[in-house]
Image 1 (tube, rainbow, N blue to C red):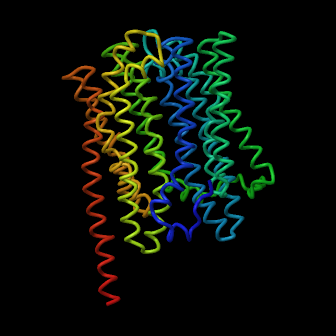
Image 2 (cartoon, one colour):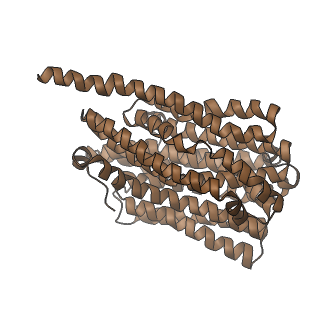
Image 3 (cartoon, rainbow, N blue to C red):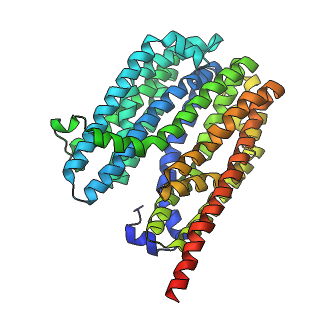
Length: 457
């Protein structure tokens, strides 16, 4: 599906534009989510629920590295897009070269530190008791692939910056399919267990990076960098860092939450509680893909029309994005509430985990029908270039509201306190975001339209 061009963003009906923008974004998120979901099912059924918990322990590391690559990618891609539009090929190439350099420098340093302190870091991430040994096997191999993962995430955003969404989508599909095939071969056929799961994950990163490298070396890419482009340009790094900070902060908070929850749940219920959270977390990633797709599709529409002073269209895009995303969220809510037992049994044969997961899942998804207000609201501020409110509202749900709740409520309600923290954080952040969004719409969009009407009359 072709993306709408600039003129269409300001002319086509908002509803049609939202669908046109949201579908490819949703497909990309869906592919990645299915990969994570099926990977967890394979590991749970072929190795065991402890293996699911072990992977969940290592997930904060993978998330943070992926976030680092995305932050460098998004920050640099914004510069590249504008540079290509201004026919400044020199700056575009220099930015891309700096993206590669800084990604390699940072991630290789992280690999060295991670391997040096492996026995201290795994327990800190929640890899205790029976989880420690499989988590260590998985962690070590996945860490080898960290620079490749970061480069792949960075390179994918640059492909989009060049206006090649189909290549970017293929870059997401290849590692997903590759990981599932390698899971089957390494775990089920060759019986390599946790080592097989780890090499399947790292192998999928390598496949993705191989495709991205082919893209940039082929005639499909405009960015043919020279050796001199790898030299650090601090003005570019500064701009790149400022633009990518929101993305990095959001994903860093996710990593911190995984770390905290793995430790809290292990203390409260041992390995099985960590496995329950791993299943619930995978479902959160998978089930919300269309809601996140609508949110991503909303961004360029709101940004373009705001910049063009089409404030009525901006208000319409906010309302319809919330309406569409809420409709999808309600469907997700219904499925989770009706079929939690069936969903849990797909992931594992561990009867205790199957018994405990449905209640946790229902609590975690309890406030999902209203979450679109928080997601669209925070995305709106990002779309119009207001970085500070965008950052604060983006992390309000998972950071500002959720982290204090999971540190306080389990002391009084035990494991239930963990699960009820999810809907409470969703509710609190939605109220806060709704307030600021309403105020912004009233003070900026409605007031500006009224001012224009007075001027024209």
